Amino acid sequence: MKISSNPNYIKSSILIFISALLGVINFLGSPEIFSSKSGFKSGIIAIVVLLILALLILFEITWTKYILLVLLILGINTLPPAIKYELTHHPLIGIIIILQSILQVYATYLLFFNKHK
Image (cartoon, rainbow, N blue to C red; front, top):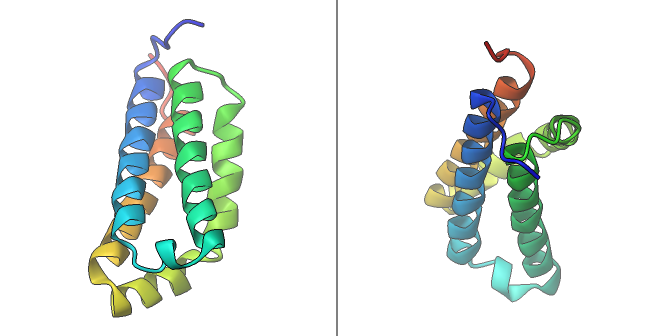
C-alpha cells in the first residue's frame, strides 16, 4: 500500500490519530472504565477502531470515509447525554469528548467536501 499524496486524506488521518490519542487519555482518566469489564472492552475497541480508520485513511482507502460517516451519525444520538453527564461529573473527560467529536467531524468534512486540487 502507498501512503496517500492527497493532503486532505493526510490531514484527516492526522486528526483521527489525534482523536485516538485523546481517547487513550480519556480511557486512562475515566474512573468507570476500570470498574467494569464491558467499559474496559468498549474503550479498547473504540481506540483500536479509530487507529485502524486513521491508517486506512492514510493509505487513501476511499470506502473508509463512508464507515467514518456512519459511525459519526450513529454516535450523534448518544453524544449530548454523554457530554452532559461527563461535564457534570468529570469536566476534563467531557472536554476531551467534545474535542474528539470536533476532530472527527472535521476529519470527515475533509474527506467529503474539500476536493484535492
